[in-house]
Amino acid sequence: MGLRSWVASANDPDSDFPLENLPYGVFRYANRKQIGVAIGDLILELGTCASEGLLKRLSSDIVDACTAQVLNPLMALGCSAWSELRCEIQRLLAEDSEAQPRLASMVIPRDQAEMQMPMQIGDYTDFYASIHHATRVGKLFRPENPLLPNYKYVPIGYHGRASSIVLSGTEIRRPSGQTKGATAAEPTFGPTQSLDYELEVGLVVGEGNPLGEPIQIGQAEEHIFGFCLVNDWSARDIQSWEYQPLGPFLAKSFATSISPWIVTLEALLPYRVSALERASADPAPLPYLAPGSERRDAFDLTLEVTLQSEQMRQSGAAPVLMSRSNMRDLYWTPAQLVTHHSSNGCNLRTGDLLATGTISGPNEGSEGCLLEMKHRSQPVSLPTGEVRTFLEDGDRVTMRAFGARKDLPRIGFGECTGVVVSSD
Image (cartoon, rainbow, N blue to C red; front, side, top):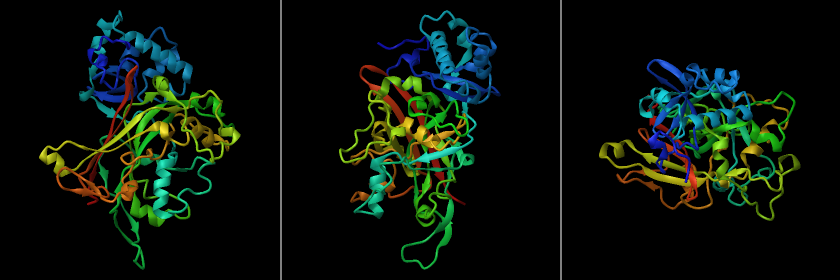
């Protein structure tokens, strides 16, 4: 039996936000912006709790961080402070909490809050950590050798654009750019005709590292405050023309959506599992990326993508499940991504976002983007008779993630959603 809260909806076994989760976000309500904690179908006003003295058992630096309007001051305090605050919030929200009468006026319905960007993001890096995604995409261009020689040695990534990261619910305007058809003599400029989604998980950096001092693999998770969902929208036709020789550019930088709630690493510890078992012929990670023999650095999180066209919404048709995959199938773990990113002395900073890249599984139905589905004999069919090879205007893409096992409470991420609108 899991922990129980005086917030009745948090005790629902299907809730994303039980007492064992307690993700952080920033919201606006009644003309006030503050940090909040999701609990069932409510939000605990953490800033109000701090200002009203309900967190007085904690140190002043933790209390002060809770009164900020972004999560960065809290994230910068480190994992000991995060754990102390989490324990205190659990105590306040527990079923037998003596603080319930006072706290009852400090919770609001989640559906009445206007969610805000949870942190200031200084830098954004996107990795390519799913071998199943990399293999399927590679087969489209190099059927005999889908993976480049470096893939199994080095976590591949590129530096993205932090300024165009948007919160879930923001409309995604179809981008324009240069494209060149296979038989065309020259490129043309116009709206992308191959707009895609990418199902990813984002790692939010808590404490950073000084310039020139790499983060060792054994300490990497101490620098991860938590996780969120990421949809790294991609214009495939623009990408195919521009990516050589320096990699992704305008095909990616027009928009990246993230979910509003940051699920802490501590909340996900019950879902820690062993990393993907590598094939016997695969090279072992180089020593600086090699975890200890007993470490379990992967996470058993189910990831889902649904699509609902404008015509489907008008007809009342429910969204269609496009794919279901699992974060445990990543070739490179979150700890390895953090360690590799800093291995040259690069200084990660509080609030930096590191995305896994598209997360896909080995089987049909687990593809994390539409581009991967080109290996199928037929395009995706929708209940209205529409088909999709890439996204059309009016399409709503929704991503979800959760840990769920019979013996454990469900730990959910909520939703990351976006509707494609015309470039006009």
